[in-house]
Image (cartoon, rainbow, N blue to C red; front, side):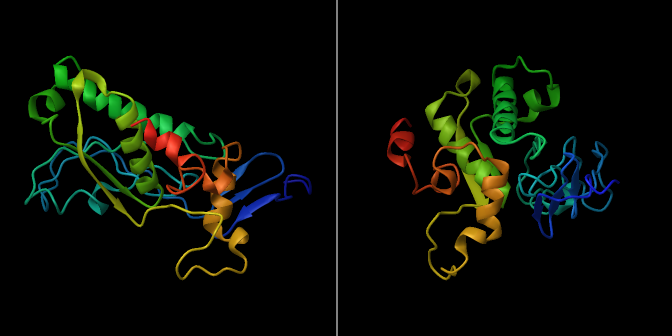
Length: 221
């Protein structure tokens, strides 16, 4: 690299570094794990897709064992685990749109017209649950809100959602959050990094459910 390309105008440690020439270095990237359509001999789990949980900028898939192996013996289910585009190459709302498209794709199979027979033949489209953690939980929240505003294809409905360690933030610290240096905290900086153009910044209801414009947003549901 030349001295110019080595310049780092954006650095959010220990996760990501963006160089002046536009190249991106993900410091804790998760390796992509291929699908496993054949059953795991230990767990009996098979997967056509991979789950995601990382921040909006870091990586999309995680090994299916991380999230999907344990519940299945007690609660048979089909797991649809979409990948999404990442920031800063694809700023928000790209990841939201990708996950909304995936949710619509799932719902479209409820009329028997989808491209995945295994989903048509085995899925119960009256019992759709969505879930995730960290940035994934933020996406789940926004997908649930959007599904209340816009109809899913073929009358499919979301029965429930689970959110773990949800990525929400605000311009004002709450609870035990330190008041000093709040605007320099990683959650604050991450949101401005992945969605710099959003109205209301960290008080937009996409990241702060109690924030700017929530009445109009929730009133559309």
